[in-house]
Length: 320
Ligand code: CA
View (cartoon, helix red, strand yellow):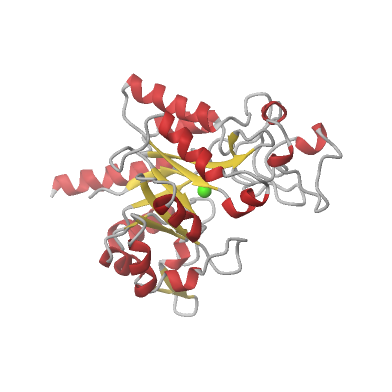
């Protein structure tokens, strides 16, 4: 099976992440799925943002000085939707204001804004209706435990919004992803979600999620997951070990173990401008994941490069 290409925050290698232009561009590049990270506003609306904070990708600090919490961060949950929609979006910056990916899209300007989950799902419906090709959606519930402390059941809101746009059945073109293992089980067992579910796997100590990621990657852990989810989304570095001394890679066996439990594997994040160690080119990374490990899909900031790789590979196979 040809692996699916998931546009990570849109074609975020080319345009500011999670903006509608980045999503439309990813569609035009032939991505199979568009990813939406979802967080809640003060008025319980859902916006497409990677972080619960606004400050790394918008001008919120200049526009709304004094609205940060004690930790100095500006939280989407402290702003109404109208306020968030008035912000300008720019390329991601770190805490010091330096660009995380210096080679990416240069300016902010008026073109880039935050949008609601509804607006993006409507864009997808309209693009699909126009018929160039069909693209699926791949929403991530961001920090559900934190949102619950903030008094909002973000997961229920996301599932309801998806349902209104026709995403409810296992065969619908959607995956729902989350790092929080308990919330993934809650989606299946309590909220009646029949959509395909993907358990994201991070590293313990990386994120605030109350989840034991190391145990999850074992055969037993994957067997347990398989009772609930359809697939896993591991960090790309969990697919292999790398010895810098010998310049050699060793398959971690994760893909094989997951396949053994009937799970699809969609690793993140494939970036040609930030290659993981052990790879000298983006094509070498794609070749390893797709042709050697047989992943079922991948999250990439550069859907154009991944689609091109698959086309060229297919052309080569047809020549044989
Ligand atoms: Ca994500």
